[in-house]
Image 1 (tube, rainbow over the protein chains, first blue to last red):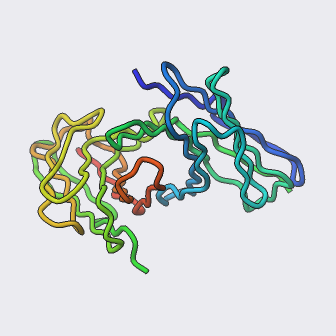
Image 2: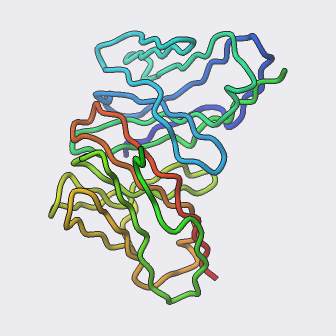
Length: 111
Length: 113
C-alpha cells in the first residue's frame, strides 16, 4: 500500500494566524511530495514540491517541510487570509509516474 | 491559455449506458492521467499514459478504458455505467518526470442513475 494520510478533515483558524496542515505516509519515503490547493468545483492547482533530501521549501507565505524519520510533511500558511480558505491536498510521487493523493484538509480562515 | 480541457462538465447516465469523457491539453505534456474524486476517498488514479500509444492501469481501473492516439488527447471510456461510478472525474497532465507538477482540468461531474 502506498497510503498517504492527511490528519485533519477540517481546520478553522483566525485571520493572521499560521495554518499548519499535516501529511503522513506509510512504507518507504517517496522521492517527492507535492502540495495542491483545490477550490470548490475546480481542479487541484499545484503549489509546492519538496524532494526527499530537502528539509524545507518556501514560496511567499507558504512553507513545506519533509521529515523522513517521522514520515511526515507539514504545510504552513503564515499570515493567513480568508482567500486562503480551500482544500489542500498532498500527493506522493513514485517511480512510474504514479501519484497517490491524500483525502485533503479543508481550511477555513475566519476574518 | 487553455491548459487542460475536460468535456462535458456535467453528465447524467442510466445504468448500462456507455460514454466517453474527453480530455485535451495544449502544453505538449507527455504524461496524462485520469482520477476520480469521491467524498472521503480523495483522488484515486484510474489510468495513466506516459506518451502516445502507451497506457497503464492505476489504482482503480475496473470499468474504464483509455487510449492515447495523440499527445494532446486522452479520452476515458465507461463501457457499461454503474451507480458506483458516480463521481467527479479529473484529467491531469505533466511533463514525464515525477518531480513535475500536474495540471488539472476542472472536472466532469458524472451521475449514474
